[in-house]
Image (cartoon, rainbow, N blue to C red):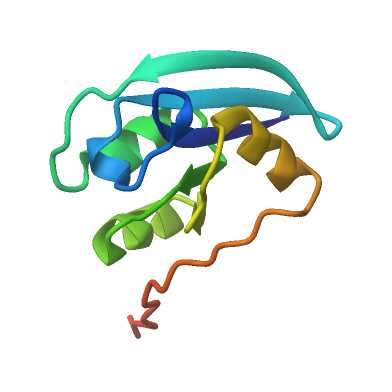
Amino acid sequence: MLLIAVASQNKMAADHFGHCETFEIFTTEDGQIVSEESVDNPGHKPGFLPRFLHERGVNVIVAGGMGASAVDIFNENDIEVIVGARGQARDLAQAYLDGELESTGSVCHHEHEH
């Protein structure tokens, strides 16, 4: 089972992840969408939304745009980030399952030594 969340505005990919209206969360099995849930954005606070979605079991987040710090937090929580998405939330989730959705946004990834 894979959970795909799409940051949405009227069921379309939102340009800014943190300011979306809802998260359309698609439960998938064997490459098919089996259920869909619309979850209201609980509010934009730095670092909050990646953890909120992680606690809901989300594996993939899809958005039009996202700040680098949010991407880092998603990565720390083993959630795949797809940015630069455009279109209907459900179509984007299916495109991801079909291997046709790739991140096109320019987000910096930095390696840190611990």
